[in-house]
Length: 442
Image (cartoon, rainbow, N blue to C red; front, side, top):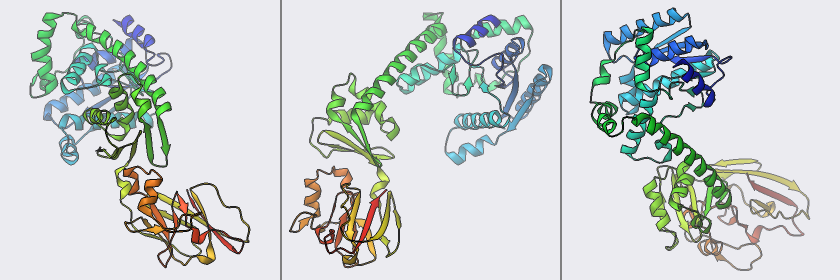
């Protein structure tokens, strides 16, 4: 088995056995005891880390003592941590199992960094990977869940992932190794144990090589996931446009993709949209504009031939003032920089993100606020008034972005600039202008 593990490390490029230093997670159970012994016989440098979760009383105390002696046997550094797992689970509102997982991996990473170690090694093997795949399938999953456990994930490596459970047991017997049994592994209160004891034996009657079969399937799914990742990246390059905190996705480009719903779900994952919601979004492609969809963090609106995505918090703005002589104003999601200069004949900026205003026509303080129904202004270049609501329609501003439009208002309640769109004709630069206030959206 030593040669199989050595070959697996090389093929998967897990780490450099000659130079890298590992932190090995050892519970005292059969799998982790085998991992420690294999690494020792392969002459790979490692330290041992053991977690005491405070869940099994004296039995857990005995586990910690056993692992401490194991580290002494191999003459390697030893680290142990005692967690208040139930208290953490209650505080975070998560299961005890999830709390234990969160605590241990965070602690492993702290030890790896503080001790300047290269990788964290865990004792996951073929059967663990098979169980994970089936659990994910039971709960519903995409490609990421179907490749099970990765042999290498960042700084975490799993040297035994190519080894079966029976091989581990044979290795223990052959080398007369002692290990600790965790009674909780037999409890069917946990979903993984129910799968392990009640479901998998039936599946192995159908296919005695189930673990190896699922491992090969996981490798193929992993390859398909990489193909999808590259395809999604290419689609994103063609379909996505970013402006400040708003993201636009071009619908016709999305419609030309293969498996549109799957691709769009990958594109929308960073914004928290579930697969079922994405199916509804795709169904709305041919519908009327204005259909809204929400995730916990973002709002998406189907607007003509684009999807418009923005953080939900962007609609919550207050009122902010820019005093005379003030050079910077920060509102929620908006930064403005103001500069007062002397002299006539200055060039009018072309960018919509900059307004050059006749300072002597402005009454301070200037106020930044959201636009309101009934607001009107005189868009520069026009002679008459225009309702701001009509102006935004003319500018084809998506429905879910209208609430974000803000205006710069003088002390006598005149709109000097619809920020990001158009200054007001009444404050434009003329030949008589002596002082210019340039306000720039950063």
